[in-house]
Image 1 (cartoon, rainbow, N blue to C red):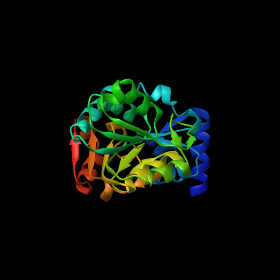
Image 2 (tube, rainbow, N blue to C red; image 1 turned 60 degrees about the vertical axis):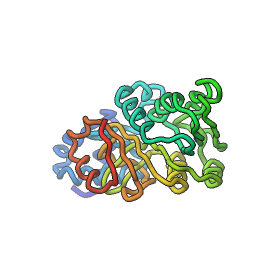
Image 3 (spheres, rainbow, N blue to C red; image 1 turned 135 degrees about the vertical axis):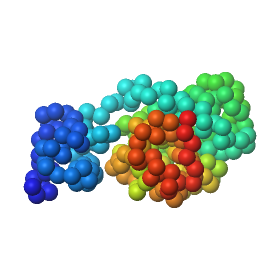
Image 4 (tube, rainbow, N blue to C red; image 1 turned 135 degrees about the horizontal axis):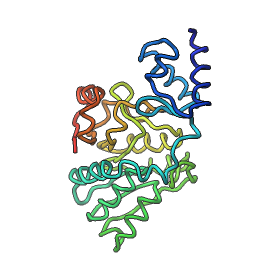
Length: 255
């Protein structure tokens, strides 16, 4: 079957089923797992679908952030608690927008003496709501345009503002991470924000729950060699992709 025929078949299956597994595509297309992975990656780049662990879903079927906020909460909180163990008073942090970093903000609110620069309204409001400016933390909210997927700012204005600062650490939560492309996101504008934070930070800490390990998303923003620490869950040990990441990254923390 030619490549374009496979693409048409994948689109047809998704239009009927809303989501389809890699295993089913291997049978339907009579191709290898690697071919399916390449086809899904190419179609995601075209905006035709979104890859998830074990397959793909239609773009319009991606869960809204209000729903994602209730997904893997325990695992995300474990990541957040581990991240705070890497911090010291007086440090400046970049924190991007997302459900994992919203939970991270709750843990950061228990600390003091930090400067947190963020494009996330959830992060800023959580820190502010802790009282006394977030337990003595300074909160800087980046300007820009309102994002479509997460409650935060994006766009050239946000990226330009990031360039005014230098942070000790960037604490970023991607859509996926793998040993070849590093940390990836789905939305282009959110990706540009994350990339700018990485470029202007001394160290990069990636918070990715086990469901994101080995997942390639639409746009890469941080290559493996730029990631100083990956924090993920012990459950990721079940995934072959974790061993590949451990071989490429400076440090992997399992919680």
